[in-house]
Image 1 (tube, one colour):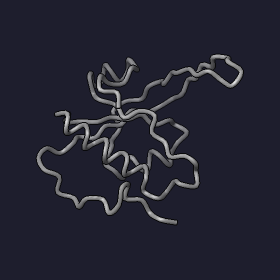
Image 2 (cartoon, helix red, strand yellow):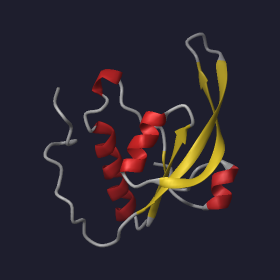
Image 3 (cartoon, rainbow, N blue to C red):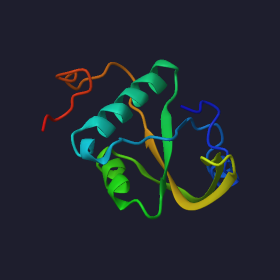
Image 4 (cartoon, rainbow, N blue to C red):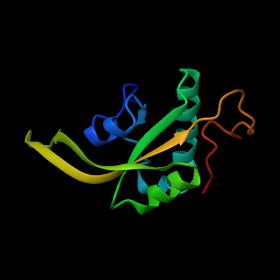
Length: 128
């Protein structure tokens, strides 16, 4: 969780200080579609609420419609498009720069006590 918000200028201009859930992924791919990502997002929402936040945002790459569908099902809506930039060091020690077209999504978090049922297990995941 990035409490001070997304670093992209487009996002900061649209909604300054919106906390960002960043770097979410389920790996290996065989573990996807079992509810793990949704459970992680719900926990992040709870954590944001515990810290007095009323909104949570996250970015989704233009080439990741599966994640975008999940976020839409969870109630996230488009705020703005932006260009995500980051770097990493590969196995040979070379720094690689990445640029990705993304959409920043937000969800207004309800206040008060949670009314939904608690997860059935540690992450409320579907078993194979």
